[in-house]
Image 1: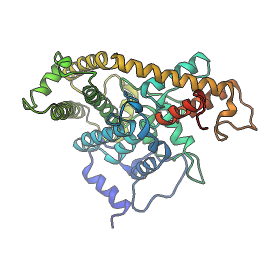
Image 2: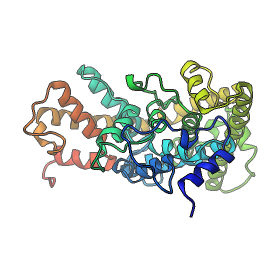
Image 3: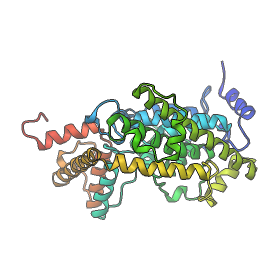
Image 4: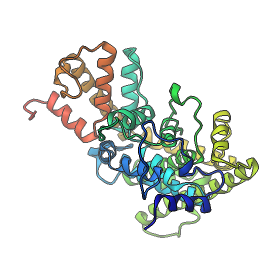
Length: 390
């Protein structure tokens, strides 16, 4: 039987000097005995998979909300895709795959229902009321440190510091890292940066897949993109349209990953990192010059394709209509809870406790953020349509 010490010794043999080794973790907020067979990051991954917020990702959507059909990406399928792409990148760069997987599986736990429409709506409500804001990275962090209650000796999942930093400082075009004072001087690992870029890569690829499937995008819409043309040249001519869709997405991912690996390896050789600590310190001081990155040419090509996809997909009338409907549902729910908070569950709004206006807004915001698309739709029916079962 392989012990934890065996796994840690294996990491010493196969990981690059700059990789984050399990034995070098900064540890957990609450002291715990180490596990006999699993490393700290393997335990983190397992805790995330078994938490309530992870299960809810199945019914939280990306672009096409749940009532549009069951083919389209959900937060869960997106999360699995990010983890798969990130592990592939990490494996080739000799990084810690367990740490990568833990961060990837947790990076979207804090997303509310209805994708980015849900997040922007909650943030706008909180801002307008001067009751704070809503950021899904910070909410993901709060879920794993406060709201998940599974252990008798501490609140949250008590994850390793490197996983928490990776969640809190997650950055893509869609995601803005959120700093809090206790982690101000904590730098990200290369493993966390791999998850960031795998998330961006997965977003572009699955937006194209879902866009083509929905009919909101056609292949002709993307022909002006150099990256699309390069991927198209790798796909056999005259094949079935459905097979073409899968093959073009496969080619797009492959082209981007190859470019990313080549550019990242070049950056790593240039900096000669000897320890994971060197990487963390670098990321604190050099946010504009990431080590894990695409070449400039690939960045330009991705930006061009992203602009086209955004215009054709996110501005398509069907998506705008869905987005607006999602916004109205969340605003309606927030409004009715605010007016009559005793409609909230007892664990959300405690009857024997006095709430300030800000605390009331925070409780309602967190409750709505915890909902799946399906639950939010059902709740809206119960509260706003006559004769619905409550």
